Length: 338
Ligand SMILES: CC(C)(COP(=O)(O)OP(=O)(O)OC[C@H]1O[C@@H](n2cnc3c(N)ncnc32)[C@H](O)[C@@H]1OP(=O)(O)O)[C@@H](O)C(=O)NCCC(=O)NCCS
Image (tube, rainbow, N blue to C red; front, side, top):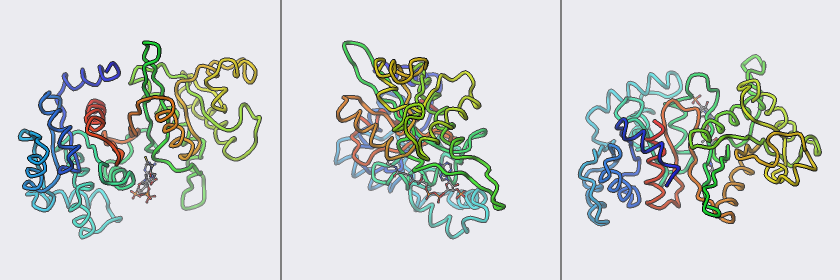
């Protein structure tokens, strides 16, 4: 479990508390039991106390050390509603905020915002959109970021060595288009947004011990194909170099040119990234989501993520098909990055 060393060191250095939005789910309870036994973090479980206790008993899990908070009986709900109304000023009424806070995705997110916890992990039953939307609306993008995106860290052992790669964005931004203000002026181009995804994914990769060599992917290599998404990938490389001139990034590349030294020799021999890329940026969510799952299912990689990037606090989403071990590891990733 080498890739978790830094996260575990962080958790030992300073105790964090994580909120699980689905406090009665057996996979969550199993992971919570393990996290508490190993004293890795404090745990808040959202849900009705009797239901949480019954589910824990049914599964044989010990979560006595967890704090159980029920949005329907929470003592400080009025303060939480007031804070949310202020945060959603003009966008959600008091009634809408109160209704939203009865659901544990919004309630859990507001617990993080109110400082009752450091991190949140949800999505065992909520969809990605329903887990991420409260974070986008309440936690918001951190200073210096224009958008929230995500990456996956993929890990496998090959010939006795660890192999780690990063991929983004496979889970949040469906596509990229220029942002315009009310007067029709472009405030952030699509390429600038994809560039930010590339820079953030490289940072996440570096956090996990990857020395990022970033390839912005396409169906074209250095202009061999034409089209709007080819241009987007091409322009994103230029924009990313403006954001971080130190970043080792290149493209646009087809995947084979990005990873195969032989193909790179033919298609782009002078590139410092082609043939040796380890951080892959996709121009559309379809490509990214399909791509990481191919690596996972056919390439034998373990996939960790989506790890959200650009938010003011660590909030992550589980796959609804996750198992208890994945919840445990994602909790370490989420709280360990706090
Ligand atoms: C993330 C997602 C849910 C946001 O969609 P949405 O809720 O329709 O977003 P909206 O456009 O209504 O925006 C809601 C708020 O989030 C903000 N937002 C949306 N996308 C954002 C982004 N990428 N970064 C930062 N903020 C964002 C909006 O600005 C808006 O804020 P406001 O209410 O304060 O004005 C949507 O992009 C999505 O469904 N992505 C794919 C998720 C998925 O299914 N992944 C595959 C499985 S892993």
